[in-house]
Length: 132
Figure 1 (tube, rainbow, N blue to C red):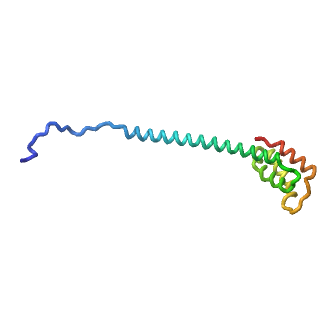
Figure 2: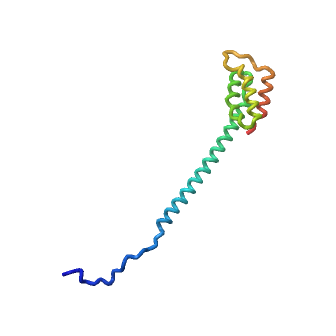
């Protein structure tokens, strides 16, 4: 029996079907990815911003609660914690450099004397300049 002689009437030719489900899937994945990245960035930005503010508050509280009788540790602490505030404005930077020069005499020595009145005045002015 030869199969080439049998006429086939119910088989239709191949038709092109417009199928867009792959494009819809790719678009929905990209949209979900963009939403995820935007949400992650917003949460990260808010976390980072709150951490910076809390660090500034904590450092300001540390500077304000320093024991001025412990001269050497106070000089180191003001230099360390005050560096966070020096970039706030040119006035802050100038004051930080000025107070750092004055405090250099109280660091790097084994025994140091108490702060003189002028340095105490600068420390109080510096404390009042700090804002969060």
